[in-house]
Image (cartoon, rainbow, N blue to C red; front, side):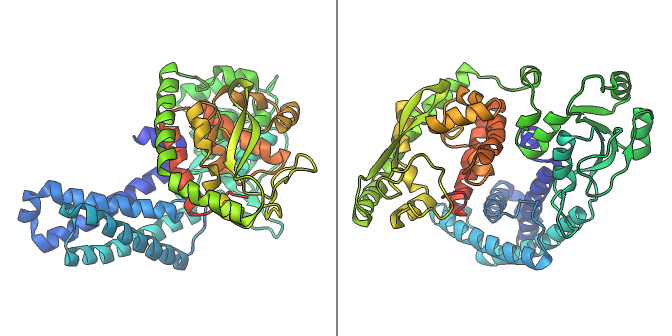
Length: 470
């Protein structure tokens, strides 16, 4: 389980999450022991541990939806306290509902509220400690960057942050790495924390020893004639981890830098593999959940249809051609959220605060109710629940010409939601399409059941927090 989480999140973040869960569990268990005594606690160890585990899981779930595990955010102690109180309060409400249906796992009032106070106190100091560790960049791994171009710049922005016009550095706190030095004959395009630049000539192994680095990131934009192969091999034989810049960037960002990718990297890298067994299993789950979802959502769909007809003239449903798997064009169905003939003047991207959106349309877009009819597309086999968002033929033709590898996103069935949708705000330009393609490529490369579950979970969070819609 730890190895799977490490693939999608930095190790330090994973350890923070698991450590916090353990603290909640131990705090509740300690209060139980104080109230019941060790002998009673040990006799019913399983039920007491189960009760503590349920509280721990529900509280951490609440923390997740309150963005308390988004370690890129720099929260002050006051903000931390406020969010903890809100998240714990929400957790208590969820627990009350859970206890109503499963009364056998209820924690008695005195034990629960003492546990609540102890847990909140412990978590406050735990998070303040972690905040100070991140703020002072402690326990991070120094790396050497071999290169100074655009790929090195992208990696630097993620690891070290970016310099604002007023000279402040933002971001770069949650990667778990720091750049000890750049190796190359040119000044790097980005160097916000003024890491030293060492020209070629010195031994790479001696530089690793000097800067206490156990990892070298090869980030040349053009490697022809610039790869110190023998020195890199020597470092590898001495236990230094040598990593390709594109793969490293993928691991710390959850996306693939399209501008730096070449066909050889895609061919020889791990991933980009489609399993027939997984393909069939995913299809069976799509059929089951789309059929069930259409039945369960039918009351909401009926109310929505009535509201749309009362709000503005025009049909209830909106249909549009989209490009699906292997480039096949299909018709997608949604509840109409714009005025009739919204595109009578031609093809346009959706805009923020789009004036064409109706009053009911704004609400159903925000809550994603407008996408309920797409479960019919899933049931038919045009789409899946999880996958790259299908685009219109006009834009696909344009983007395929201007963006490298864009057509490869059609190697999998498109989805109602996807990795790009939960990681990147709504896109309305060619630049946005490129940025979203970076996430789509990451999804296609790392196809797995766990990846689909992760997307589904983050989609729920996106809907609850009302993000990403236009």
